[in-house]
Amino acid sequence: MDTIIHYQQFSTFKNVAVKILATNNGIRESKMLDKIKCADPDKNNLLKLVEHFSLGLQHCIVFEKLDQDVLHFMSKRNRKPMEVSEIRPIAQQILVALNALKSMGLAHTDIKPDNLMLVNHATHPFKVKLIDFGLARNISDLKRTSVDMWSLGCSLVFMYFFKHLYPRTSEYEYIATIVRMHGTPPDHVLREGLRVHDFFSVNKTSSGNKFKFKIPTEYMGYKGRMTDWVFRAIGTIDNMLYDHKKCRYYSQMQSTMSHSDSLKLKDLGALHLCPLCVVFLLSLVMFK
Image 1 (cartoon, one colour):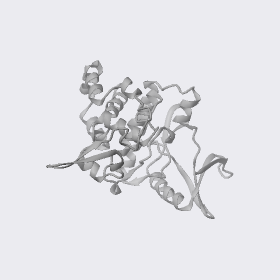
Image 2 (image 1 turned 90 degrees about the vertical axis):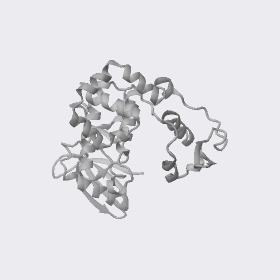
Image 3 (image 1 turned 120 degrees about the vertical axis):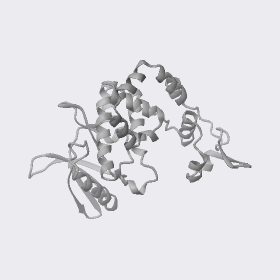
Image 4 (image 1 turned 180 degrees about the vertical axis):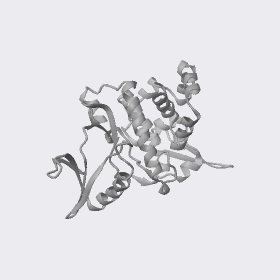
């Protein structure tokens, strides 16, 4: 578990935060923050590194002190979901951050409400920065670059409902919700996956192996109660998209989105997003 302490620098009298990690993890994260430091962190809504140094078997990263993360902020106000008018500026700022990371050839890979920090909510409401680059990766090391857009979309949905789009009660329920909402992943994707046979059975056919999602009793006798709030609130992706097209804002979004905006979202990887998150993200960013 990483340790974070706060103190005031004697030389500058500025309040800073110090993250204390195991040496290897600390050095790795420091290198990522060094890269980001060259890209104007304030302009691009990224955490600003002050310095870093080794201390025995540990590595210390000193960075600007921020206010509180979005999850803590929501918990403090009685777990009340956020309004669209509150979520929209957060979405816009993190998209700026992701665009900056992409220009540096980096992916964050760990976007969640805990890693979206309010800078100073009292003086700058809903001004945020993206933090925690311990799992950041070079885009060249990834098979797909859309992981950040997917996780941002899931984070925005969490802010709106104060519930996770995909339940965390068990691995089986997590996968079951994805399959129920999006359908079974293509065979070529499953063939590359880890632990696929824990969740899918394989039926041999004349055209090759076909994957089928296991029912609860096939999955090690799973007897838990499946979460269904997301289907009561939203339904399947197909139904949600159909309902959205009937909405009066759908045609407005299509007509007001410029070609350059469309290309920017495509460049960020939005077309590989969960469709629910695409619609949610676009509605937040484009509707003024």
